[in-house]
Length: 161
Image (tube, rainbow, N blue to C red; front, top):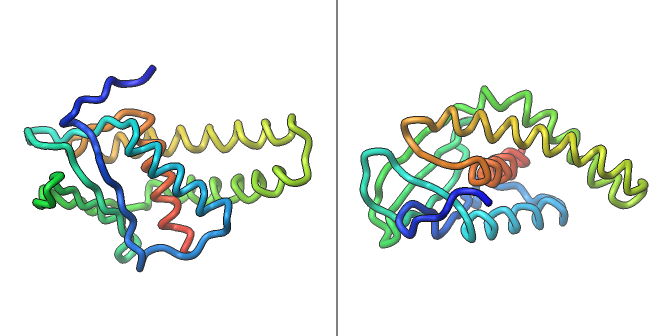
């Protein structure tokens, strides 16, 4: 089922910095849009020691660091985290390779081949979500599904190169 969403411990909007984004292919654009929709639809997002929310988040890449800007629903700034992506370097590289295989397989492979590639993709996604939860520990409290969707968006920012 996942974590029950509190009305105040959630994200109600997530935006990506346009200057940080490259134009992805149709598959990548779709995956990014779905991740934002799913994230806003169901998430757990709380800031330890801060009794506010719901929140908005804006993600950007600045000098190979993730800038994670959190505001209250009314736009009042709450906190900005700068996160090194070094712990994600291998996963992002592997995830990119698996995603390329997956998108190619969708068009030409058997359902069992597609499923095998997708299992690998989900495994990397889970590993990245676990690292993200650890890296944000003490700063932002998120559940596994929220971390998975956030990783999709971090990866989208990384597509630029």
